[in-house]
Image (cartoon, rainbow, N blue to C red):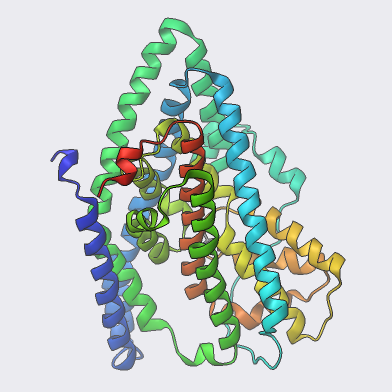
Length: 420
Ligand code: ASP
């Protein structure tokens, strides 16, 4: 099979159809046999659960080798190491800026709409609540004590730092560097091919994941906190459609419509896996092969974004903080709002792109302004759907910033971006 046989548009359509069918099948189960023991054991936890889990494992399997190899290939091929600093500076600046806009929009919406007034707790499910690491910890943990351990644990920031250092050393090591660099750039092509294989499984995996969601989500869970759910979903869509389109147009002059039409597969992956991390392989392949960003920029900005950029998560956390304050009738001061902005941005940097982490880190945000962490119990039951949607927003932000940075560095192939 050659790379040409990988038809992105056809695959995106198949994935979207699989999502629709999965949802219909899941709802049908929900309305008929979902509460019977055999259906739970053989269908929901059985066939569907196993297929969904295997799909997520295949994606997860790719992350560490892909990020490591493609980042080394990207950095070692930079003609000017100063460029790396520039790309990093621009990417981090844009990631922080978009997260800042996201949390500000969210707090404003929570203040205006007041979703927490008159809310009733959702059906809750047990979930572990952890405390957010401090900024100092995040900073120290970025430097790997042992790169192999970082890879074994899938710790993205230390892996990124290690790969950048190896890439830079390759670029500066003369002939031996050229030989090793050549190996990594070939290896990168091979790993990308592997991503293509795994993506062929996507329709089945997505079908299973969405069907389980449809089969196990009770509508009653949403009633008491419906205003909160609708507000979070609306702000996520607003940020994704309006903020990103404006920024893309402003910085590059490129068409947001074209951008979104090429993002369909990435959005479907992010939505069904609820993990920006697991979506990295697909995001990286798409920004390079369909949006035209060069590997020299994308191999750095995509994994970095999946780790430090979580605009969707920031929106949920901002609205949730407002919701919980209103529910407990706590009046927040301007200083407390500013504290929330700061903590949410920090949480977005410190969190790994895995399912549900945004809610876990909300505990730290609430604690910083003295709101009760038990407030999280109010929204636990409805978080999965919001997690899926905010993950789609998170990865869209990563791809948008990648296109902007690549364009500003002359590393965006406009012909690829414009092609159909
Ligand atoms: N699931 C999200 C992500 O991977 C993080 C979160 O908000 O929980 O991007």
